[in-house]
Each structure stands twice: as structure tokens, then as C-alpha cells.
Image (cartoon, rainbow, N blue to C red; front, side, top):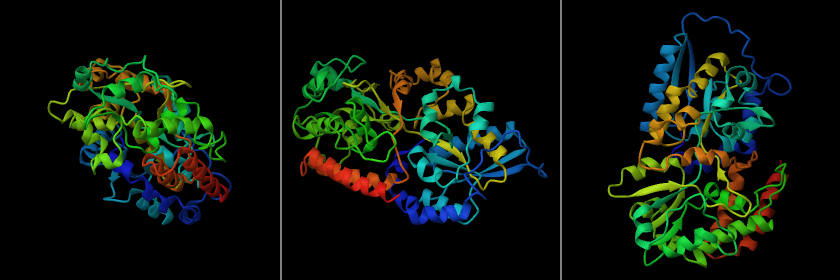
Length: 440
């Protein structure tokens, strides 16, 4: 259940995921010898006197916290031998987690964004959950691609709670006024002609109105790279591949939307406003984002909108994996109790509440495909959330996610503003990122 506030604070994690801090984590909580062993569901914990209390460290806004508290209350009623203390730091979640881990007082369970799975997994902080999952989770009831992002070196280190995928929000009134058909699964694009997507974006662009926009960071950028056959790294993630022709082709198309075709507002044209605001005021016809924007757009009176899948590219159709998962700390004295709580977030009751909150997408098929979910409008096209999970793809990440993200953000900003060519920026990214990767 990710919020935009969490998304915007990701780069703060650099202080946590850097080598010095990760070294402190390793020293504080390294297993006695060798890699962390998998937790065994059948290993009985010593029977405590009274209920076992576990601590769950998470981030959450007020509305999300209410949902967590409701989920937790139901869990405690169904599992009276376990009590849960929810710990929500007022700020700097990752700093708080690092401090607790380094001090030997790590929470039993903590929330994870999969882009940091490698950083924490490489130090053995979360225990492998494979035995638990194999024994107690029927993956056929869930969209199994969601599990991929929470794996590290072949081990399942977190249990997904929800997911977020990239879709195309569109203003129905603007489409109707321009005489353009609503976007659907038949739409295609390619770097040379732009396809159906560019044709529509051009028709929807006029004075102080643009056909398309996004937030211009890795998550909405990734599908365009993948759909053109490119990627961010080589297969084993030891080398940056930003200057691969197919990767550059996807980035070039996005740059052309801004600078060549002028169907997307440039930073100067946005004048301090963001894309969601301009979509809400009717100045942007198509806005690419995730389900966390649904509550915002539902609250805008007279905004007639719906959602569609992203257009298909030359190499197929992809969307980025988002969302969060539950990790169990290797310092926990009650891993079985923590597992019970983590698993509860995959229950029908919890998944329904996650769906109703609309910050993210539930991953239990029976909930996501239910009439109750499908008829929760707007948007009318709620089937899009399950469709996109068939094309879900986790971002390839390393232990240096934030450092690499800063490099990419800096260089891509030079592209979006026209100060650098795509080739210049991509070569610069490869040089800098490969230097980071070579440093270990």
C-alpha cells in the first residue's frame, strides 16, 4: 500500500543503503556463521506466558494506518496468542529501521519496497520465507508474478501485501471533444512513427492542453524501455546498459514527446505544477501513473476519467511492479508469530480493505476479480488492474539502488530539458553506474 509520500522519499535511503551503514547493519545483525538459514515453520517456539507480542515497523499515512489497524484487530481476534504493536516513525522510515537493526532491537516484521530488497537482503537482515510460503501459501490463488520482486539470490525474502502497476489515466471529456477513440488494448507505439499513441496525443494537444504526461522517474519510464526491447542492466546486473540502442530508443521516444512532438509539457511549461494537478484541471489528456492516484482523482468534482493499459511496443507490453511486502527480521525471537501476521495481509478480509483504500491493488484473485471490486467506480475499467499483472515486471535493482537512481535522474533531467542528447546522457550514465557497480 504505497503512498506518493513514500515514493518521493526513496532517495533518502542512500544514507541507509551505502556501504558504511550497511557495514554497520552487517556487524550488528550478522548470523553466527555463513548465510542466514531459512526459517522452519515446523520449529516450535517456546510457549510464552500470555500472548506473544511482535513489533511491526511500517510507514503509513492516516488513512492507510486506519486500514492497518482494522486488519490488525481482526488478526488479533482470530489469533489471540499474538498481539501486534504497529510502529510508524513520523519520518525517515529507512533511517529508523537501520538504527533499530544496528542497535540489536530490530522489529519482528518490517515493511519493504522491493527496490531495496537487494540492499537489505545482501546483509541477511530479512530471513528467507521459502519454507513458510511452500507450506502455507497457495500461489495459484494470487498473481504469482508479484512474488518475483521480493526475491534475492533465489530466496523469497518478503511476502507481498499488494501491488502497483503503471496504467494510462485519461480524461474522457477531452477525448470526446477531440473526436479521438478512448485508448484500449489495440493501441501500439514504436520509436519511428509513434503509432496509435502518438497520433492520439497529437490530436489531444492544443494551447495549454497536452496529450500526455508522466512523472519522469524510473517507474513510468521503465515500460517504454522494456517495450522497445531494452533494459537497465545486463542479465546478471553487473553492467549498465543504458547506451544499448534499444534502451536509448525508448528514452528517445519519451524525449521526443517533450521536445520534438511537444505533446507533453516541459518543466518550464508546467511552471511549478505537477502532472497530476494538470490532469485534474483538464490540461493533460493522458497521465501515466499507478492506482495510488485513484483517491485523488475520485475527489475531483466533474472530472470524467477512466484507465487503460499502456500501449504495446515493438517488443510487447510491460508494466512496472510497485507495491510493498512484509519482511521478518533475523533478530526476531518470534518468527512464527510474525509469519502469521504477514500471511494475514493476504487474507480475503485484508485484501478487500486494501482494494477499498485504492492506494494499491490487491493480489488475491478472488478479490481483484470480484464484482464488488470491479464495480467500485470510477474508474469503470477496473479490469485493467488484473490485466496489467500479466505483464508485470520488477525493476532490476542492485545494492546501490539510490546511488544509481540519482545518477539516472540527473542525466535524464538533462535529456528532458534538451541540454543533453539521449546518447550523451546514456553514455554518461553507463560510465558512472559501472563505476559504482565496480566498487562493490
